[in-house]
Length: 51
Image (tube, rainbow, N blue to C red; front, side, top):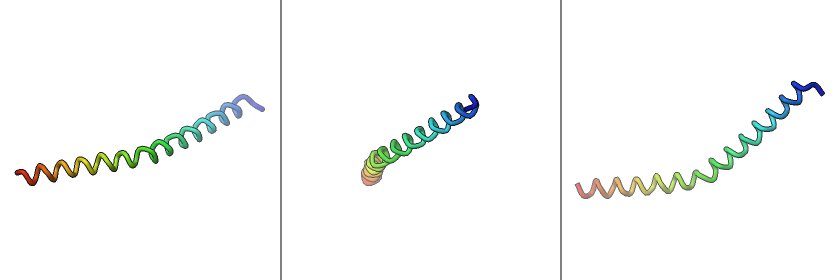
């Protein structure tokens, strides 16, 4: 197999794994972001009520 083709296949495999890893990371962090957003909204509402 030519060297350039082998390098191209390695790059494609690496890109695939990186996309999967990023997808899992986003899926795992989404609930955390939702919790943080909810807490911020609650704090803003409580500050508005005090004013």
